[in-house]
Length: 394
Image (cartoon, rainbow, N blue to C red; front, side):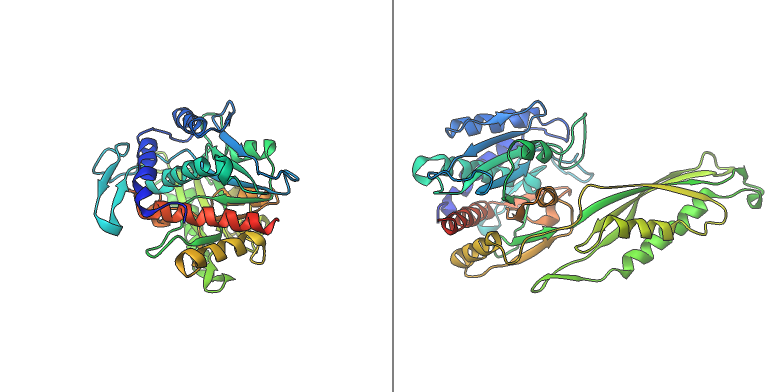
């Protein structure tokens, strides 16, 4: 065990430093400056691009084929905007609780500045000559705009991978449960559809003279709800299952209380499960926009990547499973129903796994927190996974 339980406070200090830095999507410059300084202090030579993505390479003691043996340890520096319900300043970290339930509260505590804190301490450890892996080459990357494209920037994983391709990746989004960090085997893909409805306006006293775009939208809403209820669990590994989802998340239409609306626009969030494709979502959209009583429907669809699943027979999951057994006498697996950066590494042909502090249910909520006990636990599980993967290369 590399990180003793007492080191929770040291990692927690890094987490608190980063919570105090506002880093909404598109505005990650201050976070990049902090991360860059920490990596330099650890003896590394970080690179930083014009969009504030930061990464550092830890070369192995016995260099081999760089891409063949390269693993990315990755996390995003941006957060969502604070949701309603915060009872304190989201950017002022607070400590609550005691014992194993001692917590840090703050925006990004779970998603995912705790993961970044773990990465910084892992980078410091493995940058020391005596601790560098024998054959495994590490790229520790801190990227922008995972939560949303903004300020002219898109997800920074694309830019880092263009400079540093690799074979494996471990992302550090929240994956803990009450007992220990779990191994998140993959995540859903995310497709976003926008449906534009065109009807015909009329006086509200004579609704039969018009074609009501909002009424057509209500039919689509009902069809989306029925679609969502039709999805079934998809087995991933053991008792871990994926489950597709569809939901109407935005709707806009109407111009006045006495006018039958001729236009309406809906946004549908479609979480894509393993085995599903963009073509499946397109067929669903075709079905849900038919027979709207004369209202015309057109739609656009954006899907950055399909669902992502780790190679269940590959060396990365094997190393992580053995590491968890060694540290916690069990290997616990999970699945992330949200879309994470795992999909981008998988899209680049890499095998990817997620291990990180925090609970996934704490993302994008008021009073977001991470337990301090999970900081060294996650750091140890990642470190032991890297060491076992490195050993398999000898």
